[in-house]
Length: 130
Image 1 (tube, rainbow, N blue to C red):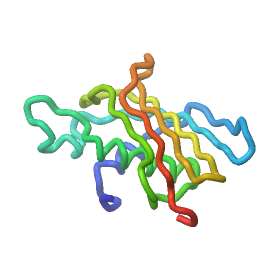
Image 2: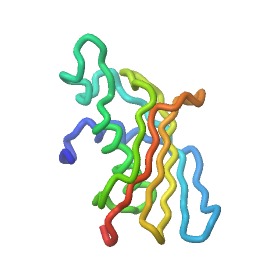
Image 3: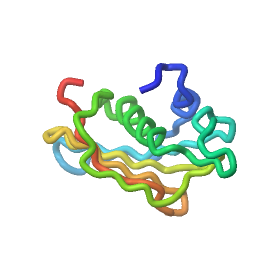
Image 4: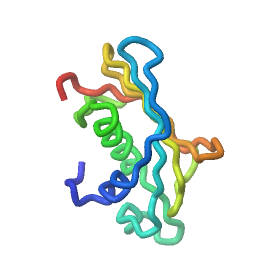
C-alpha cells in the first residue's frame, strides 16, 4: 500500500466517526463518514473522461480506517469476497461501516452514500498479530 503521503492521508485526517458498537463479545463496529475530495490523487489517470475512485483505493481506505478506528493493523491475509456495485465519483460523501470479528480475524465492510446507495461491500481476513 502507498506510504503516508498517499491520497489516503487527507481523507483519513477528515474522517468522522458516526457510531460505534460492540453488539457481541469479540465483535466491534464503527460507522465512519468521509468525503472523497475532487482533487484527490486517487483520480489521477483513472479514466480521464469519467473519473472514478479505483477499487484498490476503496480497499486501501477500508483497511486503513479499520486499523485507525478498530486497531486491526493493515496486514491482509486474503480477500474472502468483495463486490463493487456503483461508481464513486469525485466529491462523493461516503458512510463506511466496518465490523471486526476478533476471533476469526474477519473484517466486514459496507461503503454507501448517506442516502443508502451501495457502492461496495466485502469481507477481508486480516493477518493475526498485524
